[in-house]
Length: 273
Image (cartoon, rainbow, N blue to C red; front, side, top):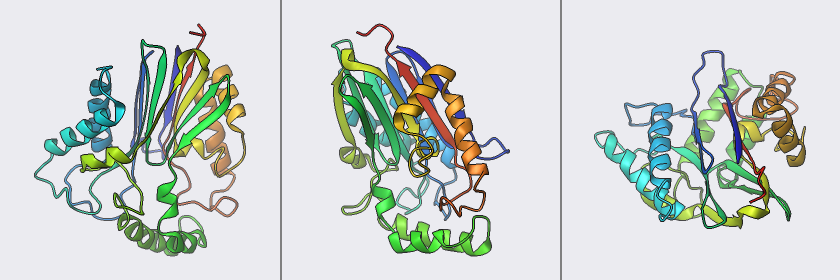
């Protein structure tokens, strides 16, 4: 597999709550969930994403472990690293997770938990694996927040109300699931596999990168993959930033924030095996 990755922070301060690792056989991409409320934790979101990402990269290197088991063990491991924090707090640091592992037995496995995406381009066409359960929560509060321009005080207040309503549905039946402090969340991940020989290429994206397709609609998944393969993943992220800059107040594309951390990892199967 030929691999390439790009990640851009949302702002000029360079702080990036996404995390990734990529090798010819394993991709791990995390999107730290923005904290708009208290967290009960002395560590930041980027700290959590980095430590969980490292644990998952190490755990998934054991090809005998199912990816859900890798995720469960990783969540438990990171919880042990800051057990003195209030891990029962509704806002405890969390992250969406995607993993793709290319096995020696001819299968490519994937796992998705939270609002990240794996896009597979195979002999059967494009398959997008994503988890939009979080966007199905706090719907009234989301609609209310979308009514205000980005950057206004009213928008910020509405976003806090939305976040509280969203957190009330985190990691519970009927709500959404994300990696936080409870290893049981791993059981709710979407998993699957595809024959590696059928895969021409695939991408793993955080929602900050995927927004150029959904919800912006400025590219199709085919076009995104083509651009990333021809000019590199950063070319896609630059298109994301250009689209965001064209709508700074969120009037064309209502959204939570003007820009989001964006990460795209690409793999191209040049051997066909």
